[in-house]
Length: 170
Image 1: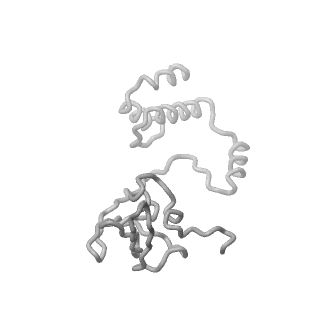
Image 2: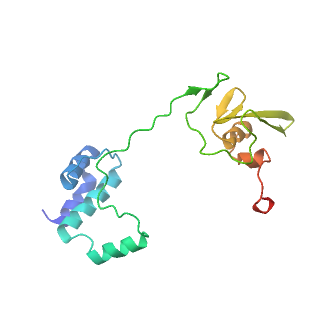
C-alpha cells in the first residue's frame, strides 16, 4: 500500500484499531485513548520507517539544544506506577489528603499556630497543621484552597491571609 494512502486511512480507524496498529508499528502496546495522538504517532513512525529517521547531524543539534538532556528515541517500556491519594485522618479526626508540603514556608507559623482574618464581618481562624490547614472542620492542602473555600473564587492564600512579603522586605 502507498504510504500516503496508508496515512490517509488512519483517521478512519477506531481507537481499538489504532492501538492494534500502534503495537504493530512500534512493537509494543499502548494504553493511549486519544485518537488524534495515536494517528499522529503512527503516521510519524510510518513516515520515519519509509523515508528515514532524523539524520545524525539533526540528532546532534537536538542534543545541543536540549542542553545535554537525554534524547528519548522511543517511549518508555514500563508504565509509571499509579499514584494513589488515600484519605488519612489527622490527630483531631479531620479527613485529609496524603500530600504533604515539601518544606515549611517561612511566612507560616509553626504547626498548631492559628491564622486569623476578618472577612466580610466574619472572624476566620485557620489552624496550621503539619501537612495542611484546618478550617471549618476540613483539612486543606494549601492556603489557596482555604481562601477559595471561603471566597468561592481562586485567590492567593498568602495574599488573602496577608502573609505575603515582597522581595525587598526580606
